[in-house]
Amino acid sequence: MEYQRYGECGIRIIFGKTIDPEVNSQVINYYGYLKAKDIKGVIEIVPSFNTCLIVFDNTEIEYQSLLQYLKGLEIEATEPVDRETHIHDIPVRYGGEYGPDMESVSSYTGLSEKEIIQIHTSTVYTVYTIGFIPGFPYLGALDKRLFVPRLATPRTSVPAGSVGLAQLQTGIYTFESPGGWQVIGRTDMRLFDHTKPPYSILKTGDRVRFIPL
Amino acid sequence: MIEIINPGLQSIIVDNGRYGFSDIGVPASPALDGFAYKALNYLTGHQNPSPVIEAIGPMFSLVFHKDMTFAITGAWVEGILDDRPFTSWQSIRVKKGSVIKIKRVNSGFRYYLGFSGLMDIEKIMGSYTTNMECHFGGYEGRPLKKGDIIRFRDIKDTVEKSIDRDAIPNMTPPHVLRVIDGPEKDFFREDSVGIFFGATYKVSTKSNRIGIRFSGPTVEFKEGVEKSIISEGILPGTIQVPGDGMPLILLHERTVGGYARLGVIARIDQDMLAHLKPGDDLVFQRVSVEEAEKIWIERMKKIKNLLKT
Image (cartoon, rainbow over all chains, first blue to last red; front, top):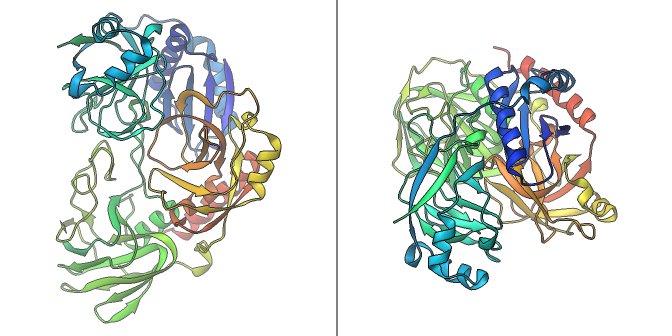
């Protein structure tokens, strides 16, 4: 584990340099431990693929004392825990009007639409992180056969519910938004609801399976 | 209550931000000028962070349907209250039926309107602020429109106050922004980073509440370096460099990002990000994190004293 100050009010905790389920699992355990600590002066804890970002208020807690505190917790915070993992089934309509990039994914990968759907629905994915819009899950690991680049020119608008691919990740647009992932299907499931806790159906560390309709 | 006659170029309801939900991708979306926001709460007699209107451009106009006190902070405006001129950074008592209209914005870009009552709107996820992309918070999750009515609870009788001119930052361009090295600073060629810190950039019309874009010299990646990172948590004020080498400043609407981070705008200069308008000149100046932090903490102490009630 490495600690790096980021700006005046951030500490990056780096668990590894690559996208790796084992590294991500450490991040998620650490995040859960730290969140429960409810440290005074810590405003946000953002778990992602291989790092955890701690955002603090430096008028409430000094960087050095927070850093020493975090280092002191390190052993306990990184002990493996048995997490209850929830598997979410997400129904998806693939191709056609729901998956405008299905054809381009097919020609890039050399797979038929049927094969793409079969491969995409046969993995139980892990939510590696959530962002860039509320509730948007970055899911991995995607089967290497479905590797596609991001669109050269991102769309100005991707409909809510769109299921996309980008490199070795798959994700779900929880809101209509601009975006560059290659869209192969759409779900009607509402993954974010600002009116009631826990707001986001998915949490980092949850498991997700796509069900073809 | 008040009624919007003209929302100007864009006006939304904001507060000090929606915090604690970065882990599910929910951004803070606060008032972009933090000092202006605090000063406004002070001028309108609020002890707790209360919702206010963040507006841009001239033509903004509203009518008061109740006696109350209001103030404008942030950009310096030329306003008309019924038939007398007024400006920013002082609270003014108004009578039912009074109309205010913003004629011109003289320096700065965003201005904030606050009132001596608590807006009767719902808190969403702990905050009144508007998340415009996801359409929640604020006024029905959207910018204000002509005819919108905002009701108030607990309208207090507040004395007229003003903020010392010396305490108000200069918002006229060229803007000098101090920058702390970012996590991926070493991804970039040193000569190119040297140019970045000497050059004058021009704020682009493509800027919005998500980020500020500008034009000027690109920043070159070192040979063989990955042009993106594995997406991870990002701080507001981060200067990201996409593959095309043209840096941009991220504001408060994103929680994770995948572009290399050249630097972070020092907090002392982050309020100024609210006032960068298309066409303004912009210069970046390197600062150490220790120096930036020292200046910030001193400034916070000063503000606390200034806004003591």
